Image (cartoon, rainbow, N blue to C red; front, top):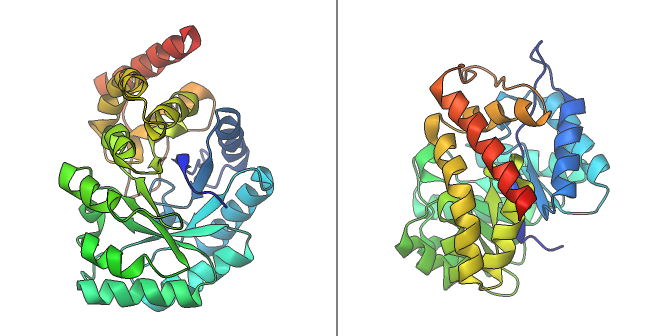
Length: 297
């Protein structure tokens, strides 16, 4: 199993009645496969995991596993605030056919570094799936420090980290921890090119939901050490990335789904749909511009 390159953190489409829209989810998965996406994350933060009922989580993940049919890895979001709950959800994901688990740092409870170390070891040893750590301090109120990652990355079931902090110091620190059986993945679209040029093996991306081909081109250039190609792809993506900053993820990226025939823009409460107005008009414009640039490339 290779977890690297262009990895999409999939949005979860809902219908007008608020139910899962598996038809739209299937189209989204197909668009990723056709666009060259190299792995997908199901039921992560972009997928509104914490708004899914247990049976919905199971249906969504099982559907993705069946649709992908082994062509690329399917990574399940299994992180919970408590260790026992995280282990239980990871075991469920394994039974449903996931290839790996993306395990976010325990949110809200604000554990110490030692608490996080023991949490991730427990999940790795008891969950039954390869574990990708996920650090996103802006959402969790805790930070998996590089020193803690260094104490975890020798465990055979801990295979990588998704790091959403895009500052230069963090990129350098994690790049030093890369080894053949432990990958560093960017979790920040805006600094993904820089991270991959520095040694990240790929990126778990939000914008890839909307532009998988262009994001794959960025990943290929950056992981191949092509600075000029990375800069060109980055310049193409930058206006769309700025347009997506108008609302918290996944509100803005879901607003782009209807433009591509991939479902409705509706998230679940407490998230609300991006209203029609300047922000949504700009998003629509940048999607159209990027599509025309990609066609001309």
